[in-house]
Length: 149
Image (cartoon, rainbow, N blue to C red; front, side, top):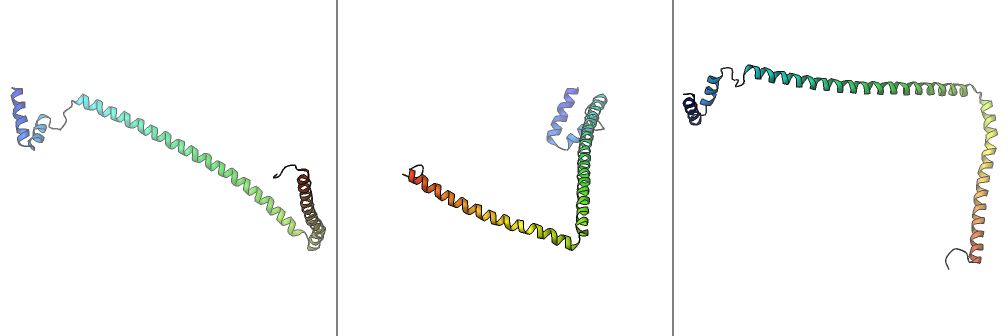
C-alpha cells in the first residue's frame, strides 16, 4: 500500500509542482525529514564547530592585542630615549646661551685662523697632486711603460 501511495504522490508532484510542498508537510509537519536524534546530533556538531571557530578567533584577537602591546611598549621606550636626548640638548643650549659675547668672539678668533690654514693647505696638496701626477705620466711615457703604444 505504501508503494502505491508513493507512486500517486510522485505523479501528483510532477503534474502539480506546488503539491510537493504540501506532500512534504504531510510527511513531517515541522518540515524536518530527519529524526529527532539525528537533528540533535547535527545541531550539537554545529555548536562544537562554532565553539572551535570562536576559540580560534579569540586566540587571534589575543595575539593581535599582544603584538600591539609590544609595539606600544617599544614606542614608549623610544619616546623616553628621545625625551632624554631633548633634555640633554636643551641643557647644552642653555649652557651656550650663558656664554657671554666676548668669550664667544674670543673662541671664534682662535678657530678662524686654523680654518684659513686648513683651506690653504688643501689647495697646496691639490696642486702638488696635479704636478706629481703629470710628472709621473711624462716619466712613464718616456720609459714606454703603460699607456698606448
